[in-house]
Length: 126
Image (spheres, helix red, strand yellow):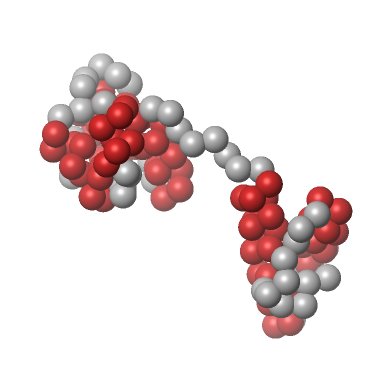
């Protein structure tokens, strides 16, 4: 298995072996893992994530709504919570996401600054 974070998974076979080991460690339960096993689990998880990000990239959103929904997913926020974070009304946010209202400049500035959505992406998809 992986000895340190300096090593990485480079084949599907190695990924599958790492996933089997992760499964075994997770079945034991966090309370029953030694410090060494916790470290191994963390390192394996990071290595598998890196392999999957490299070999199975997810397609990027192609709409402004899609990008906002991705950010909501990444931040684990519900629509109401995202509206609050952006400091806009829930109704307005819902209307923008559902295409019933065009986003205004203030909204676009907020998603640029607070969600760190690329300005070029915003301009191309408004």
